[in-house]
Amino acid sequence: MASHIRLQVARYRPEQDSEITFDEHEVPCPKDWVVLDGLNHIKDRIDGTLSYRWSCRMGICGSCGMSVNGEPKLTCATFLADYAPGPLRVEPLRNFPVIRDLIVDVGDFMRKLARVKPWIVRQAEKPLAEGEYLQTPEELEEYKQYSMCINCMLCYAACPIYGLDPKFIGPAAIALAQRYNLDNRDEGAAARMAVLSEHEGIWGCTFVGECTKVCPKHVDPAGAIQRYKLTAAVESMKSFFMPRGA
Amino acid sequence: MARSHVYTDYHPRWLRRNLSTYWWLEKRAYLAFILREGSCMFVAWFVAYLLLLVRAVTIGPGSYAQFLEWSAAPWVLAVNIVAFVFIVYHAVTFFVAAPQAMVVHIRRKRVPSYLVLAGHYVAWAIASVFVSWLLLGA
Image (cartoon, rainbow over all chains, first blue to last red; front, side, top):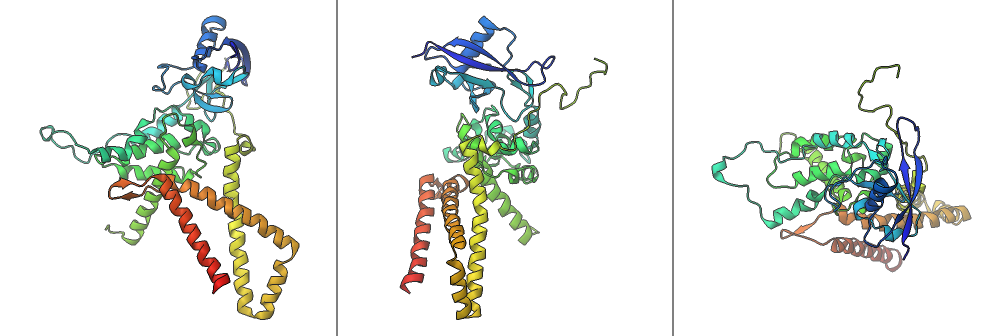
């Protein structure tokens, strides 16, 4: 087993660069080191100016997503040994503007996410005295998969549609909208439909399916979008044939 | 810097990268997707071909014989073979994608995706047997 691996790390220093360049470093490659450990080694021992985001180191916070040999990956869950002896190329996530080095701006997603109201919407809250909104395990199962999203943006980086049309709402925002649409405590499906059934909503998706393949939490955003296409089509037919409601 | 710094949604110093025109050649999965989308053209071709056949049959035996002769031309044969390969690819990739889009419940229990997929293949087999019987047996 190789003791070291060559890492090619993307650099973009906005005060001096107009394009991405690559720095190459040799880092240790013990079997339990992930790409993030390699980056931390570079920052601590070789070049302290390297910038990247990370926090939890255990696939929960969703902040260390980067492009590893062209594939969107959580760097805390991608082992260096799998790529030894390298070279291993680490770049900022695709389809997002680069702020510095490996840091991208995800503001576009944050604005889109708010538009789909990713919270439980109630027409009227019941009094506290009546207790909790109870749910059966089957009702929980309906949306649980979509609630696993950690907003890591790997799905946006894998989606060529988002790369071609930045107005597309995108996989994670639609999956999170479905997480609430399928929750039996929620009453906000009609409000979300106005946003989701826009041209840049679900209909922008052509089912490439890569969002689902790269998702580290098995959320299946592509499935969520296709399911919602069916819902939106049925609702549209209903409103056409029964304009006054069923 | 000469100009004052104004905050915008798209900061001028951020690096904005455009997707290459040939993005679909960068990954096998992207190429498979483009071929799947492109296969729709061959579906359209088979529809047109079928309509031409119906039209020839409607006009009379002479026209039908002419249609068969035209169909036997090497280039029509070549187009039909390529179209058939793409149609099969279209059907298979469509079936693979179907369980993701179709969530079926029976008695409040979700039907596993492999059964949804199997259902598509069974329906395909039944339709093929029926068409074969219609053409050869009846």
